[in-house]
Length: 473
Image (tube, rainbow, N blue to C red; front, side, top):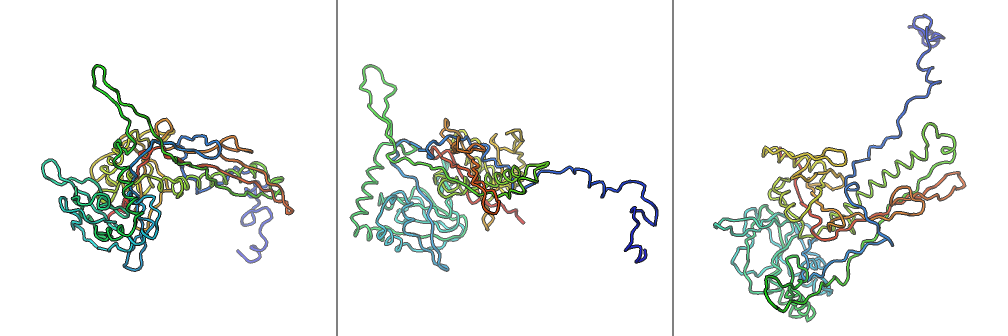
């Protein structure tokens, strides 16, 4: 085609000088309304946690969880500070050991922390031997160990798996002269900190407050309790005739925990010209608000999982945390998780964790069930749905966690908290409030979502931690 033909195309759009016989599509679109979608958003996920949690009204912006009085305190997870190859325990973190819980003298805790000695261990190494004198407190810095007991026929049985942040040997502080009731053997290489009985006695000898605190702890430990550590309710059964019945009462925690509603907020801005002129066929304000609310709900689920104050990952009782037996999430690990609670309702796991569990099932020739939930078919284990949640973090070491929940207020489970009837409420627990129009003709709306979560009793939530999700090469 010549330069003149390129610069002067046929008026009617024909080729090679031929006249165009019908209206072109480019011209026709000027007179037609195209079929279009509403604005799409890639960040929208299934948000299963928000769908399966029963939502309870929190009038007054707070929810108080009353429990029976417990004398024994659950053990916590200890964190450390590392400088090169040297590791030290943070003094305040020693309060995570049950016997030191609520001990206020930081100087004494610092003196104890300074006396811990670092020790590396190899895979297969025995750290503590059953029957030997228990004269050390051990804090596991890094690595995985097995707590072994003797089976009925003399073989080893795995009682528990201890990993980063766990500890054992607190009886050195409360009951000196005891022997190890179990063997602790390293499953992987790692490091730990240890404190011997003599070093502890040196610190306690110069601190009357520490000695008094330990005596108070021992007194509480001598109170009759049930297997959950709650103050016992005296009962009489199996008797005949006129027997003097036991008298009792049910005591409550003197300072129950209160969960305050958290908030996620943003200010949505829309120019008045857009709101006035560009509302056909879709209302611009509605579409802006819809996408903003989707982002708020995504943040809400993230906070319910990860928030340090009320998030499930940080508020699970340490007695309900389980370590995998080998590394990847296996059917045995999920069975262990289920065995620690009644009436489990759902598993929550990162999609990659679910894939890793599927690989382990394939290795064993197992085929997980499928169940219908909210008009959707999802995989399940032992009839419990396994739901994807990409808000559960995956570490740089390619490990993650699996959560299992019992839900509902009547079942002493995990519940979501919100408040309805808010001013300018748009959805339950979410309000959209007009803030005015500024001098640049921009309309502003305050969009707020109020929420929290509460764990009514410790065994309502369990976590399988540090599961390896990378596939073997």
